[in-house]
Every structure is written in structure tokens, then in C-alpha cells.
Length: 199
Image 1 (tube, rainbow, N blue to C red):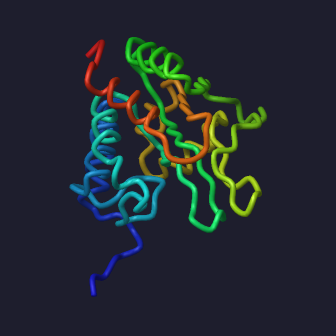
Image 2: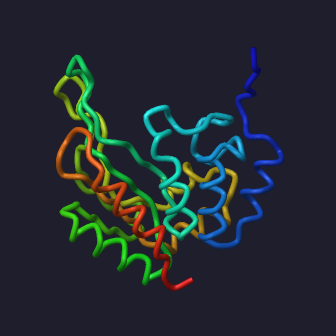
């Protein structure tokens, strides 16, 4: 039996603490997705992506290396018993304006919903967000809600430089409007990764 400690390893912590740019953070996220580092801030230590995400790891790692730092993603699916219903979605941040334009224009041309947000003040409302997961017919997961510095403190706990880097970037959410399996979102991300701009 493999023992998993409930904290990030010192080696992984040093890698995240050494990041100086959004691209550094994006490359580390790609490495975490691919399993070459074990932990990512804001995620269960020493655990990789959920099983449902594994088929999409190559495109997610590629788009991270292009400069789109992803923090949440899920495929579209429907469970056999109808308990779960998901729309494909991805959330993250982009600092490069050319990549942001390419990603958002490509997503809109493909018929995907795009939500752009700036860092919100702590007293502001998150906004309603968009439901992308239903469980037993009830809303379960929402995306597209603006983050605050307090949110980033939780997500990037122990890595204050990373928090500051992410705070300066534009928050991006791309959503497949139809629930269930779909390739449109992943095709758009693959296109953004294949044609990096501004770097």
C-alpha cells in the first residue's frame, strides 16, 4: 500500500515558491497534470487530477504551457443512472493579451460561452455564475464567479508570490452550453495550445 502524507512535499513546495511569472505557474500546473510533480496549491496534496479528467490531460497540459493557467476543468458527461449531468467547462487566468484574445474569439466562434472577470473587491458579490453540474436535478457546481484576494489566499495558501501573480491576470471561464459529452471546448483549447501567440 502506498502511503500518502496529507501535506505537500518540500520539493514540490520549493518549485511552486520559485515561480516568478504566470507562465512559470502554468508550466508547474502542466507538470502536476502529467504527474511529474505530486502536489498543486489549493488541491488535495499528493493527488492528481480526477479520473474523469485523465483523457483531457494532454490538452490541459498543453494549454497551460501556452499560458492559460487552469484552475478548474471538467468534461461534459451524463451518468448512466441520470444522477449526474455535466457541461464541459474550464476556468483559469491569462496574463498575455494576445492569448486572451485568441482563446476568447476562438471559443465564441465555436459557440461556447465566455466569461471574463477581474479580481473583485472583498465586499463585492461573486456574481451568479453558471451551473455546469447538476446532481439529482439540483445545481451542484457553478463557474464564472469572480475571485477576490481572499479567495486567492485560500487557493494559493503558502505561496504568496503566486497569489500576487494570479491577482494581476484576467480570469477566464469557457463553458460548453450543452450538457453531456462534447469535444468543442477541448478543440478550442487544443487550438490555443497549438498556436501560441505573444510569447
